[in-house]
Length: 94
Image (spheres, rainbow, N blue to C red):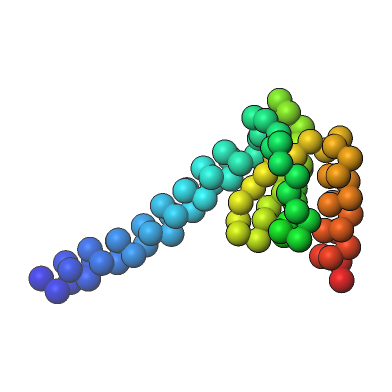
């Protein structure tokens, strides 16, 4: 009886990392493309990092990740975006 219980716990324990990794992959796949740009200028002090969307996306965008974990799709051609990118690059290089 104990060996059966141990086996059950072992199987459950081993299956947890597989399910959480699959969830992360689904979330990552959903966040690769933007449907539209944000209309709000994100304050640079709130931007933690950024990344470009995939070249296979319909809209090529920069995604700003904030300190709180939110993601904002921004137009890379907007005048304020280049300044934010430069400041974040400078901040992360130091």
